[in-house]
Amino acid sequence: MNEQEILSYIEKHLKEDLTLEQIAAAAGYSRYHFSRKFREMQGVPVMKYVLRRRLAGASEEILRGRSILETALDYGFASHSSFSAIFRREMGYHPSLLKMKKEIAGEMRMEQNETMTKEELYRQLSEKCTGQLELCYTLACQIYSGQRRYSGQEYITHPLSTALLLTETEAEEPVVLAGLFCDWYKKGTHTENLPGQLPPKVRRIVEELPAADPKSLSDEALLVRTAERLHNMRTIEYMKADIWKKKAEETMPLLDAVNARIGKNVMTEELRELAIKYLKDQTGAQ
Image (cartoon, rainbow, N blue to C red; front, side):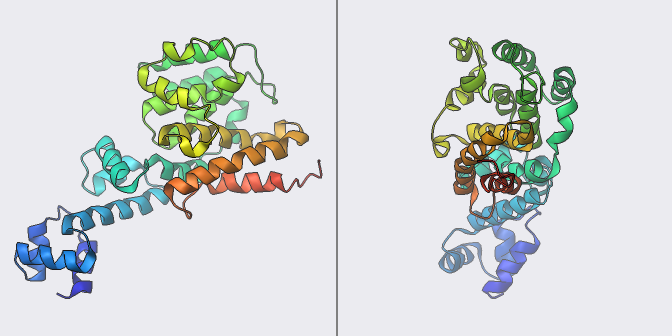
């Protein structure tokens, strides 16, 4: 086999239990000789190359809308968590950011939730979360108590919708629960002791959210901030027209952060289009 044939062989068998011995035998070399020659050709060890090609293939499938778990298992990873850990180590960001592009930007239309009550939204969320949801929901209801959205709904419906968006990214449960506190530092009341009442993993994310520079956020906190802003932008028509431009301008640094994290061609396109739309101020409002 020549170099191109070897790479083609690897591509053809990416979803199989591919081993160094198998590739070397197919190429007609000993394991040691093949390992040395491959590194000379590609600049990385054979199985490192295979892993990166698997992750690249998985990325493409996730972007096309496939679930992270199904994709991970198909490419030979043992679980969602092991895939996410390896993906994050090798690619530098959490695979849920890919779901942010596809699932949030394209598949789930949150406008439908604008007619849903907090009870209905909570019921949906409870189908996707386990033990710590009740505690976090109770605390969220307390800090947003008495507040209303521009649509007239209770304010808690916005954090609930944000949390539901995060379930569509297949984010881990602490990230989803942190979504209930997506703007605690802006809209919450009596929040002085809030972080200390939260589960530790949720607390870590929630404490990050007020950061001025989105690029300084962890993947988890960036997911929460982006999901919160996406729901805001999808329901921006309920706000006063003079607020639209300000909200759109605040959206762009989040897009830059997501863009920097996962590459210039992978971002939340719908959110970007919404921000540009309102930055253009198409209604004529100043």
